[in-house]
Length: 97
Image 1 (spheres, one colour):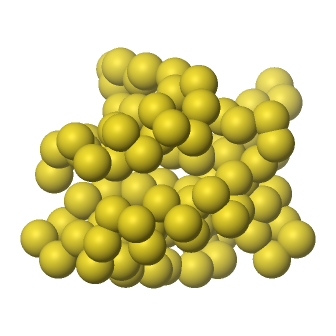
Image 2: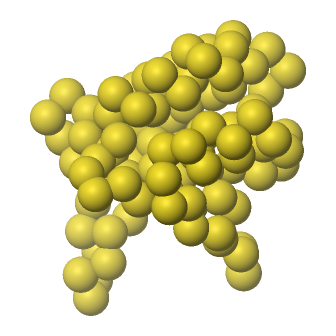
């Protein structure tokens, strides 16, 4: 089982991005190209990797990742954080895992 920590605000997201372990990640609820989606953030040697997946409904009204819509790489914290801020859903909802 994966333990998740809820992030309550964009400021907290930025702090967690700065301290993100290579084996950890962040899941952000987002809107991308007018589509409800999840953005998954991981750290790489070169910076940050963000995979954006469409939200798919599963049994019992659970939302799960569906088809990948985009894959982006950012060399800096500022660039990754700026992209995430631009697609973040309102109300803000993100989780560290």
